[in-house]
Length: 180
Image 1 (cartoon, rainbow, N blue to C red):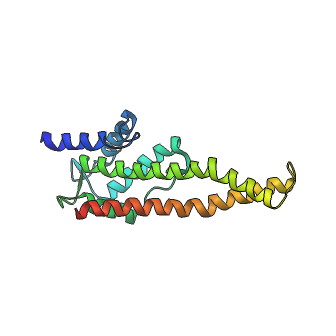
Image 2: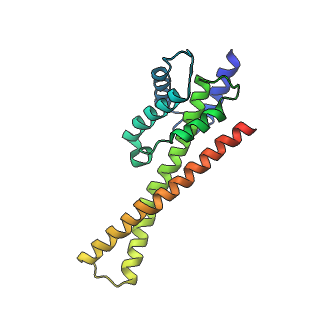
Image 3: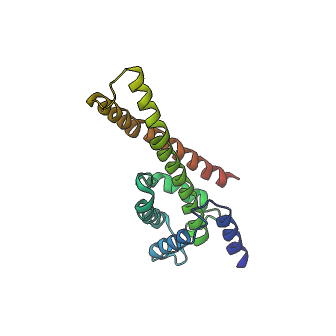
C-alpha cells in the first residue's frame, strides 16, 4: 500500500511549480473529498472527476485569471478518465485524481504563459509596428483605436486558437500515457 503513495509523491514532486505547492495539494485534497461522496468510496467516477476539475478551475481562476476560465470539456475529461484508469476499475483513485489535476494544471500553466506572453510582449510590439507603418499620429484617437482593434483581434482570435493547441497537446499526451 505504501508503494503507490510514494509514486504519487514522486510524480507530484517532479511536476511544475504549481503542482509542487502546498496550496495545490490542499486544493486537490479538498476537491477529491468534495467529489468522493458516491458509491465508490475512495474513488470518483467520470461525473465526479468532471465536478472536481471544475472546482479546481474555479478556485484557480481567482488567481490565474482568464486562462483558468476555460476548464476542459466533458469529452476531454472522459478521455482523461479513460487514460488514467489504468487498472480499469471504473473509478479514479486519489492518486489518479492527483495526476489528472496535475496534468490539467500543467495545461493551465501553458495557457497562462501564452496569455501573458501575448499580452505583455506581442500585442504592444505589433500595435506599435502597425501604428508606425500607417504613420498614425501619436496621442490621436486613431492611435487608440488601432491599439484597441489589434488587442481585441489577438484576444478574440489568436489566444483561443493557441489555447486550443495547448489543450490538444495536453490531451494527446494524456492519451499517449495510457498507451504506454
